[in-house]
Image (tube, rainbow, N blue to C red; front, side, top):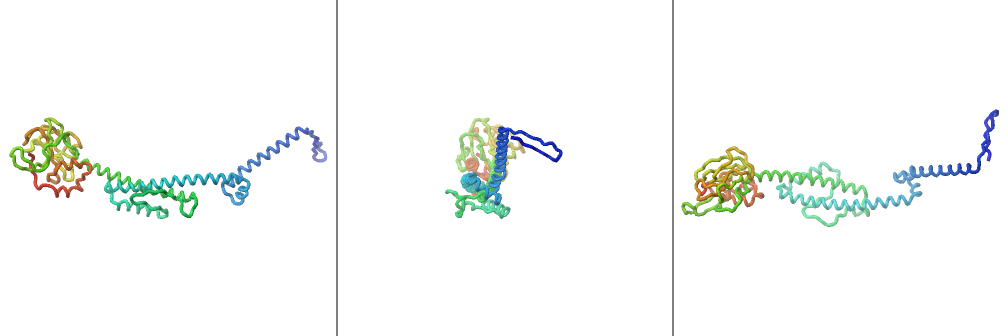
Length: 345
């Protein structure tokens, strides 16, 4: 095949000879280029229109690629169903967590009014958010996050539920933070309550009336006796400040420790005192050693607990320990206290 190219009146005519093989190769190359261009247009325009939801173009493209659209919708629906199930499980866990938080708050001494105040503040801060009802007390049963009017959950509905869960989780976190603070305060308060035994071992004479070992007559014993060999360590029943460490008549060598809130402990008949007045002592710290000084028939520790100067039964403190609060128990202690103070026997 010959191709002639002419230009103008004086220009030389040019001729090209094209073989059949070259012509076929050129046609094939053009067809391949058109196919590649069509593929680019398909991916960049049609699929983009389907995924982005372009008007008119998306409808036309949907006719071209109906299988891809149906597969995409089926995939999204399956994922929404799985998300709805997970959100339902999360909702049930949050409800149980809130119920448990209310019970623990009661044990920590937090009043329901404080929790309701926190919920009211949260509702005021987010007035536009629709909230699901919060269960009070026990809760259970299946959770269906889909509204009755809907056959399948929507993405907007799931987002709303996730926002609700986030709000409930934040409120539960605040409640547990308050509980932790109260429990810490209570723990610090209990460290000042004489609930740790000063001497490990059995108790001899208890608190109350007994036959006096010297006079053989009934008399009030105002503490607990812990018999033991001379030199046995005596430990502070609670943290506090040493009021005195000196001989005290019938008590012999005696240590008094102030624990605050009107609570004072006495450690009598010691053979050696290892603290001085004004010294800070911690719970369980060795403050003296068992002895046989003062009005005593043998080596032992005479241990007393006084509330506002009135002798109390130390066994009640040692037995209740962690559950005793001197502020809450003060009226009960006064009502059951013996009027006046007697020296150890």
